[in-house]
Structures are given as structure tokens and as C-alpha cells.
Image (cartoon, rainbow, N blue to C red; front, side, top):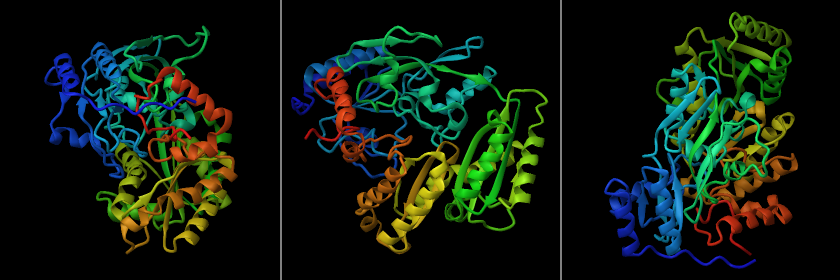
Length: 482
């Protein structure tokens, strides 16, 4: 394998040509303007960048990429900057140029017959959801950061989220893509076809590639009918085993009704209700664990409330559920979801935390939580495991908060030991160390062990073929050669 040369530093001439191309609104070069783009959401990574490009169209971006490629300058894509793994942060060299597509923020078209949306990369996920809703349809992808996460980043990381159990990850929603490639050429695959068997499905190369193969500029997404009925309940259970028994009961009743099925530990819920204003536990007593289940259907008169009550009644009788509350209004439903969505914020307020976005077969989630909790407690006495997440599809955010009173820096200095401890158990359970957040700059060191041999070599060959000079988001996804 030929070593990739190091990216070059942008020259004054390159920056001047980019400024002429993009105009005063399209480039930031002052240190104070660039600085907000150089730190990730978790403040784990602090880099530097020579400039931030803000193109207003695919044509502008293509020309800008062509200029940077000719100069050998590396480019880092950044959407809403909500990455949990540092995948949108420039390195410390100051040579990178950050590319932000927030000005490309149009919903171009919604086709109510095709159930498709033609959308630019800079549209936030929440804005896309709202546009679909106004058209009487639904964009089912839903994540905690949807108010700031942008479609380009959502697709580049193959985001999952709360509704994956029913609708799949972002990948399953993508019919077509437009992508600016590393040399500035444009791949135009904006097709609305459900069936198109003409060679390789190139769009799928870019979904989940974390910006290492090109910059997604727009997409054709599949939409769903808007639900006419939604029912949500928060249930108290003894642990992940009981949560899975409850999931099985709902799935046996009608799997097509399950829109979301989320697990929360008692420790995590305690942090939320203590540290996040406007939250409270709507149950009589705290429990070891909780499930938030949401059922939805576009059918009229589907009797959704009856289904929910019948399943819960059976689980009460079996002792699987000890308490539950059903939302009686949209406001109450949103209050239940706030308890789930504020887990990351509550952990941030509780101190330093190490996040493990992992997945295992659904049946092995209880074993993952039990074994990883015990292993991390043995590693660092007093550590606080706060697992939560999408138990219906096997994706658990096995996060760990520092022991009370411990120095945050000292705790974070052990992040690789903690992640490796959890990862060893995940691997033993036939799981993945990266379920939906991506690899980013945080976890490339794991790739050789987990995706080594022919698999990683094939990934590298694809990367080398499309981006031979290594200018697209360097340091992300791939470990250093050798």
C-alpha cells in the first residue's frame, strides 16, 4: 500500500480564490469566526482550521473542492456539529478547511404520490420532519439532536434513532443521492426509483462513510404516511430482561404497531429528574429500569389504546411490569419523551462521561448490561453505569459517568481502558462497537481488530480509489496506515 502524502497548508492565494468564488457570506477566515467550528459538541476534540467554507449550491461546492484538491488541502465536512465521536472536528495542525453546508437548506420538493422528499444537505432533520408533516406525510427518522443535526451529516453517519425498530436506519430511507467527489466532480444519483438494479448501488457507499468519500449535497428520501393514532406509555420494570419480555409481548400482538421501544436504567432516570429542569418521574415509586413504548398507525379506528392496555394488563399480571403511565395528551407524550431525550444532557451535568454506542443481538442485551456494568465497576470503583437506548433493535448507549468526587480529567484519561472493557464484552456477544454514532476520530484504533483482514483492506481500497490523496475528512474512520 502506497503511503498517502500529508495534506498541504492552504496558501493565501487559495484562500483568496475561494473568497472570490464563494463571496463574503461563503467563507470565514477570522480566528474568532472559525473557532466555533473547531470543537465538537462534547468538547473532547479541539482543533484548528485555516477557514470555513459555506457554499450556497452544489456548483459552488464542486468548484471549491476542485480548488482545494488541486492544492492538496484536506477538507472536513461539518453539519450541525452533533457528532459524539469527533467525526466533524478538524485536527490540531491548522491545515484543514471545514466545509459547512448550512446555506444549502432547501426542501426542493415533496411528492405525495411517490412519498418522497428531495432535500438539500443543510436542512435540519427537524425542519425536514416539519415539511413532511405539513404535506400530510412523515419522515420517520428521529434522533435526540434533530433540532440541529443536518440531513447531510445524518446520512453520512447512517443515523439510527428512536424509530429504527420499525423503519430502519437512515440507509433504508435513501433512494437517491447527489455527492461532490474528492476531485470536485459531481455524482448525480438523485433518483426516486424503488427498483434500480443497474450495477453497484453507489449511493450506499456514501451513506455511513462519515465524509471520507465525498460530501453529500442533497438526497431523495422515502416518506411514510402520517400516523392517525399514537399512544405512548412509560413502564417500570425490574431490568433489561423484563424490558425484553415486554417487547416480545408487544411484538407478538402486532409488530407493525411498534414505533419506538426505549430502555432507561434507574440510575439514568434519577440523573434526568434531579439535574434537568422541567422533568419529573410520573410514577409512584422509582424503579430499577424503565421502558418507553410508543405505538402508532396510519389506520383509522385501529383501537390502538386497547392494544396498549391489553398488553400492559397481561404484563402486570405476569409481574413483568410493576407500574405504568399512559400519556393522555400530546403534552404528556412529549413529557415522557423528554425523560428519554435528556439522558445525554443529564450525564453531561453529572460530570465527565465515557460513551459506548454499541449493539448486540436483541436477545443478548440483558447480558451486555449486566456483564459490562460489573466489569466497569471492577475497573473503576464507584463508576456510574447509565445504559439507555434502542433496546428494540439491540442498540444500547452504554455510558459511564465518573464516580462522584473524582477529577473529570483523571476519569477521561481512562476512556480507552473503559471503552476496551465494554468492547471486549460486546465482541464476545457478537456485537459491534459502533452502532449508530459512527467511528469518527474516537474509535479508528478499534478497526483493525474488529474489521481487519480482507474487510478493512477492501474499505481502504475503496477509499484509495475515490480519494487517492486522502483529502476527505482525514483521521476519521481509518486507523493510520501501518
